[in-house]
Length: 251
Ligand code: PGA
Image 1: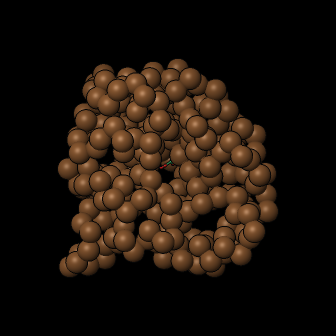
Image 2: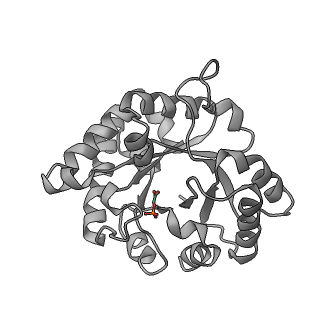
């Protein structure tokens, strides 16, 4: 199974700066056959980034969307459908905590997004994770289990080969306060066990489980050394080509 390193650029960079970042990464990233690197620019820059990558004989990364709509098409002003990005990207983030918190995204919607992504051959990177209060109240494991159960309620074992699940504790996102490796180890183990119980061992083994939350070049290797961690979801550090390349190249 290839490792998966995803850069989530969030609502940053215009079209010009996005393509510049792609070009710089293309220069800086070492070619790696055992790793899939994915950049997730804003939707406005996807077309230009796609063109930029097509200019290289061997693109060292693919593209992902940061979000897709839970409906297939129609009167949903301001939304972006899977069918509108499927020719540009291979992956899509689904259920990021910023979508859940700031835009009231529900597990029911996220479950639909997972299904729509799979229907249009986009690989979903499903994000789950507890917030600070839930953590302090000792509810972290239950929160993650509930999210997984609801977000994957329509998924089948056959879908799992295309799925990645990112454990992203909300308190660690953009805060510099990253999870200790043993916390990440515990929760990625919980995620694997839940997938195994629901879909069977063979299917669960195919899911790539990522850690995300204040990942940087100093801590990235400590997560990748964990038994159940197959990759990383990187926010802030992915906007800096030197840092992101360091994370990838050091693995
Ligand atoms: P961060 O963001 O690396 O800036 O903490 C991670 C994410 O939101 O996916």
